[in-house]
Length: 355
Image (cartoon, rainbow, N blue to C red; front, side, top):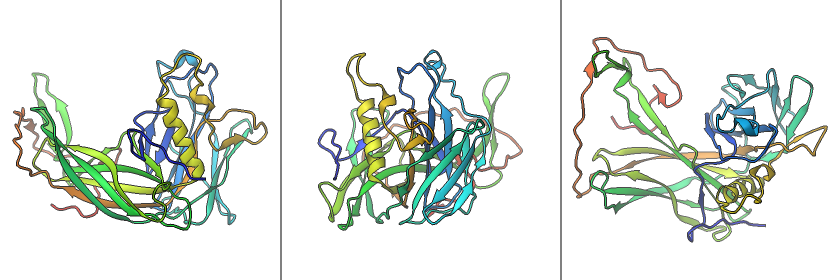
């Protein structure tokens, strides 16, 4: 059975908020709609891909109703998390911080294999995810941008980014897209001065700021294009706030039918504008369950995704007036600070980077 999701006559959905912690490609994206649930519930989410490791799993509890506004997320102490496949491979994942667990750096999924996770809490309660088949994903054929004027003096336009790819006809396919933007980071530390102003410390080594697609992604099925070329899949919009080229890395991933249905249901729930008797997001069924008590409601979804990526430079040098706003310069420190890999920052040059 093929599925398609449509909104405003398109076949993709973009989700900007949600219920679960999605762990993909070494970053954790929070989804936090208000929930009408009294007791805390376990949330297990994450993914294994055929891209470079490590890969991450998040094991958390939702806050009880009284803590929702404080967003005080909890996580089980001393849990053990295992990644397993259908060949008998098993790896115990390493705990990091705040209920997050990671694989070894060299762990890498294989398309065609099925993967699942097992979570054992300190009290012996055991949870498992149902096996997820890692389906192959085709290459991204092309990325292109179209300029669209906007009635704003500050940002007088945007560049809509589109993707095209060739769908495989043999099976039903489900796709997931997200992106990252890289730009050079000249200063690795900025501090406020007592008398006003700011002091900037230059980076000692090359450094890039990473802007993630924060909590947003697009999914689609090949319902209307099985075996054909997927055309004009909208990925994101880039602001026309500079004449400089804009570097973007787009990732295309395969989804299982179950994962597609799950995130489609999340989308439907997030866009539910009914009354107080509408179903709670907690009723969205994931693929994680309590081995001893299958009636327990466990939230989240563990995925197995094949992934391809392609970079693209958006040429923003268009013949449209761009007003440059004055910039209050920093005072520059005489010493520098090393650029270290962290969330939102890297010292590793992105593929295809042009200095």
